[in-house]
Image (cartoon, rainbow, N blue to C red; front, side):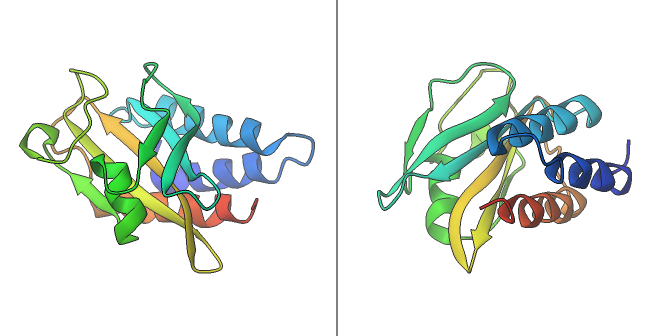
Length: 151
């Protein structure tokens, strides 16, 4: 399924009135993981109030020990500080990387903003080297813009 085909499905999930926010986010994770071959772990992290740390939100994929990530640590922690997308073609070449699984080869993290403030991010791991392109970035920015409306 193409990104363009997935966009209306993302909107359908988010506009479902009877579902709680976390249920919607989990459905988004499932939608992406099931329909994009190289998305092997899909999850959200959110800022923990005023603390400079991220808390793991809904996700799909291998269980992770990384339920709390300090700002600046790993790819997610760096995005919390930089407010910029971070695409890692080869995680093993990255110094400040927190390994989630030995099978992960590349990662993309895209921040989410509400009123200009970075409130969290979507994090995707792939078991494929150099898996992510500009198309992934644009699609995930779209996902985050829509998800941000729930906050």
